[in-house]
Length: 97
Ligand SMILES: [Zn+2]
Image 1 (cartoon, protein in one colour):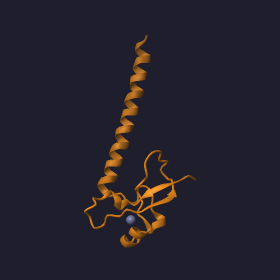
Image 2: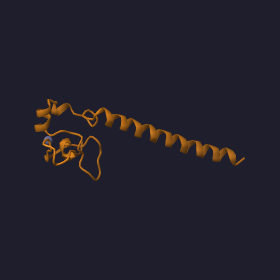
Image 3: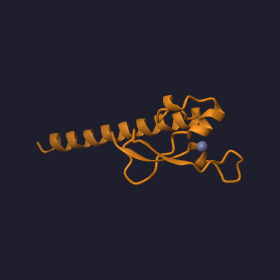
């Protein structure tokens, strides 16, 4: 298991928000990030404030309904693109005669 720098999910919010949190810590890398610090997890402090069990957080457990919808949309889009790419290959092969 790799470890990586995490930033609190509350750091996504605007600095003007009173919930803004600037905590960073080293934690397990569950999403195989390469070049950025993941921010899907709330820091222990924020988790406590929000009544979330810090240890049970997963990359999708804190997403809002809208974010989940967006995720599904992106997945579906990727699936369609893969399918279209496959069809293109198939038709090239059959058209060669
Ligand atoms: Zn926090």
